[in-house]
Image 1 (cartoon, rainbow, N blue to C red):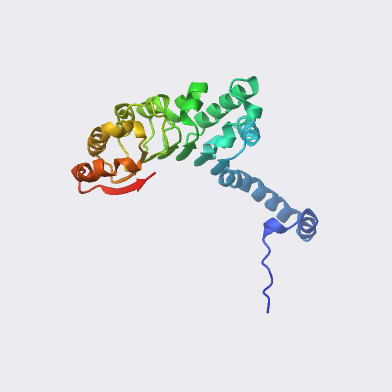
Image 2 (cartoon, one colour):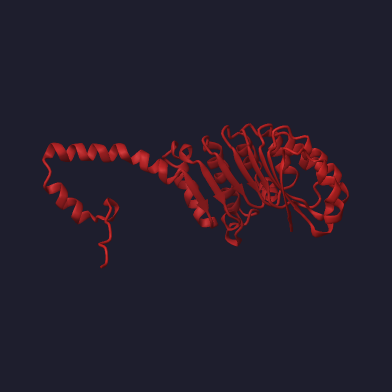
Length: 255
C-alpha cells in the first residue's frame, strides 16, 4: 500500500492559500499577515546562510541582489563556496570592464559578510592580484574559521598574515610553484588559532622538506595535519616525519 505523500505549506499555491484565508476572521487574517512579515527576515537569513556560486553570471546577479537595497543580507551569510567558473569565465574577463566590476562586487560582498565562518576561494593568487580588495575583505572578516584556497601564492600568504578572524581550519589545495616554502609557512604561522591544516606541497619544495616539517612542528595549537606529497618525496620523508610532535594527528596522502 502506497503512503500518501506529505504536503508542506510550501507546496500550497496561491489559490489554496486564498481559500484558507477565506475561512479566517479578519483579525486572524491580520495576525497571519503579521506573522508572515515577521517570518520573512528569518527565512531570508536561513536562505542566505549557505551559498555556493558556480557561474560568473550567477555571481554577478547574487552580488547585485545582496548589495542593492538589502544591506543586512550579507550579514546572514555563514558559508560561501566560490567555484572556478563563478569568477573565471570568458564573458567576464578580468581585464575587461565587466570582469573588473564582478570582482569589485565580490570584494564588497565578502567585506559586508561580517558573520562569515567558512570561505572557499578558487584561483586565489590570480584573483587577489586582479582585485586586491578581495584579499583585504577576507582578512577583515572577524569570525572566519575555515578557509579553503586553491592556486595560492604570495598574495594569498600576505592575506593570511593580515587575517583578523580565528581561522582554525586552513586548506591550501594547490600553490603557484614559485612560492618559497618559508613564505607559505610564515603565512600559516600567523594563524594563531589554527587546529587543522591541509597542505599540498609542490615539487619545487623537494629540497625544503625538512624546513617544511620544522615549520609545521612549531605551530603551537595544530592538532591535525593532512600532508599531500609528490610521490618522489616518499624516501625523504620516512625519517623526517618522525620529528613531528606525537600529539599531532598526521595523515600523509600522495598526489
